[in-house]
Length: 87
Image 1: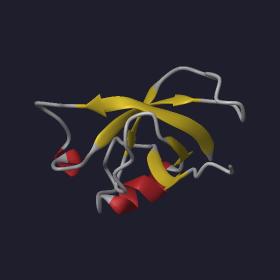
Image 2 (image 1 turned 120 degrees about the vertical axis):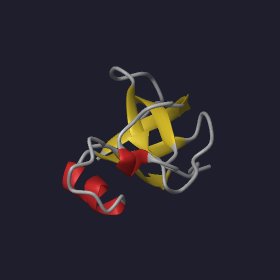
Image 3 (image 1 turned 135 degrees about the vertical axis):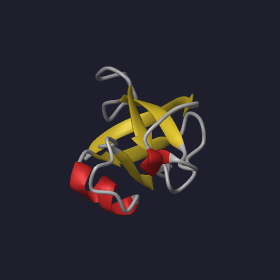
Image 4 (image 1 turned 180 degrees about the vertical axis):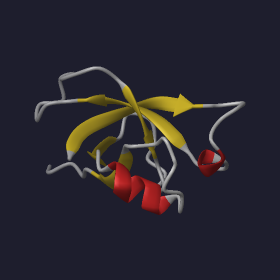
């Protein structure tokens, strides 16, 4: 699992058939204080996280492929949950 921040979304005109009608977000890994901790990456977002939302990401490609019902899907990362503020 990776703690990340949603920074935007991706729009594709040509892509793998398993990604048709799927929401793809661009995420940046962050540390526990919210500082950037890595390079941005794309992730499937079945729960509708908004921009600047902190999220948990799974990098288990087989889980994500199962979510789109296609074992040949190139997508690896998926938003698994939203992080609530502890305050």
